[in-house]
Length: 421
Image (cartoon, rainbow, N blue to C red; front, side, top):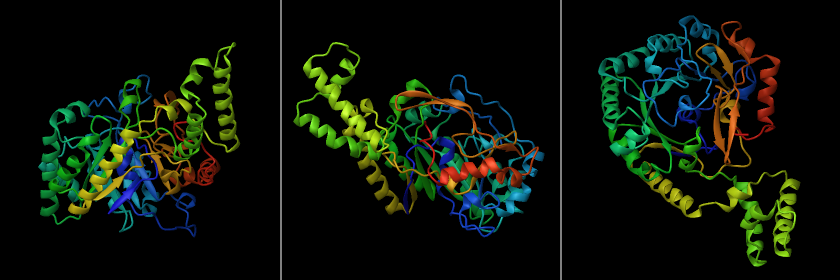
């Protein structure tokens, strides 16, 4: 099966948690997961510690507000009343879940409280998956594990995953398969591939390698650049589909009328303009006025810099990946190449709540931590949104408080900007 995600950009650890679970059915008489009595999906950050130092990670950004810590067992226990209503429990956030010494205890506790069709999973870099640890995870009741695989060429893999190697993943997958067979477990093993310009051409080979190693699913997600030097690595279109559709007729008209739109940035601030320069400014002004009348955001610089050849190549790589998935039976989840103007938030709309290692409750992955990132050529500063702490209140009280419910209703009504804005 091949699935195309709504959102083009996925932060790395969010990939598995946003696409594989079934949409939760209605509880408490409300068919909309975001407005049910309890969250349908819980994303629980067991630790913010990690055993790798990947350059593309949020933790490596300057001035990030991420403190290192492990979730206390009593904090996890506070989630118990909400687990019978939970269809998916994802046990990771920023850090490596296998570093938490009580991970299997958390899995075992949750397994005893969650509904039979609910699943428990997490994403890992795989370095700590030994034969013993794999068996321990299976015996605890783990349903799904997603291993990070961003390349199959050793040099590319080392460059992206500093401190890791492809053979670490091969060993981890072998250990997990043996543990699954030994305990007759239904454990699903998958991989996530963070797509960048540096590794995009390795995608089909990486997916085939994953299938050969026994993966049943694979998730492809886009890189969110946290530092300026990573902006050039993004492989997706930065303009929305609506902006591109709007701009194309204007671009063709400019060509017909002999107007060089690139001149706009050279002459727009000039007090004295030639008649030709004024034609360019007037043309762009007219275009911007129409965009505003449609309540449409356009970034002229980004639209003029579009690399159509590259996006054509990405499309071809995705088609090759889809064909490979059909041949191998791999369940493949692909992101969009172009952002959609008419967006939706899978995190909020599917009833997700995010719990930090210290008990803070957040609405989505993007508003989980304090950090900065780059979007549309500029730096964005993100402040976490916290609606309560489960060490002071129950999840039910936090989930149903007025501010949190109003926030989710705004998202359902699409009354919010793009996450990066």
